[in-house]
Length: 267
Image 1: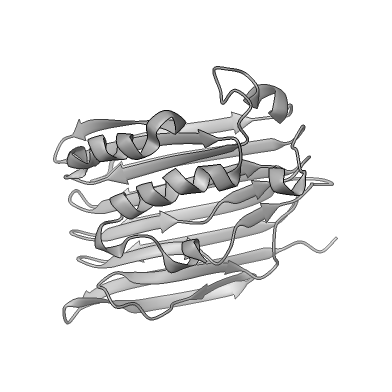
Image 2: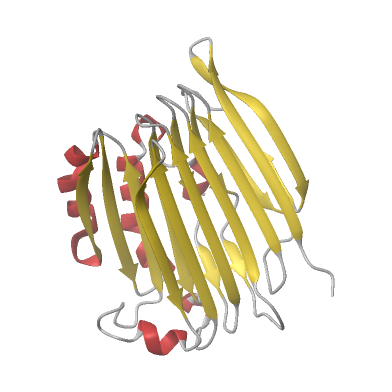
């Protein structure tokens, strides 16, 4: 069976007082479009022209902000991972930011269908004074469409380094009985939508109280000081994607500075 394959690479530089495109490469089903933006940060829209993924599909993204540059990467729509007849779908993401640079990884939600198999890796390399905002949200079946996810497999691996030092690592794994695991009170108590938000910045400590106010009973946030920088980590969960979006979009708007919420999130 024909499988989807694609990869794209984007580099942004700081020149003449603003962030500008330096390099753009794309192949296969992976495309990048860059709408005009009025601020300093460039906005990149990532597109999987295949319209979704299933077992055996491979997509890779590589986004870099050079010294002093700023870029926000998001997706045109939610990524859908369909039932896998064999193998698993895989997405690889590599992010980097040079000295004084800032990168925001803000894809819209990933929607898992019943019996889907999906593996994602996220590697981030930051200069000591660089900043990064990383968001990943996953919905296990759309309740408005009458969908439920009973069986499947989802693996999510994050590694974040700052000044070549590992400052954040996590490995999330769920399956094969996804509904049974989510139903546990120590997991989500049956909620089908989850999200992780990570901000690496020297100033993120001052955003903690406001972030907690946004989350309320739908999540929690914590802060750690890591040498010259800091880490704010938030986890959210909700009964469905619609309910999750309200606090998630408010949190992104708060943590993404002047760049705010990408326009495609509000469409």
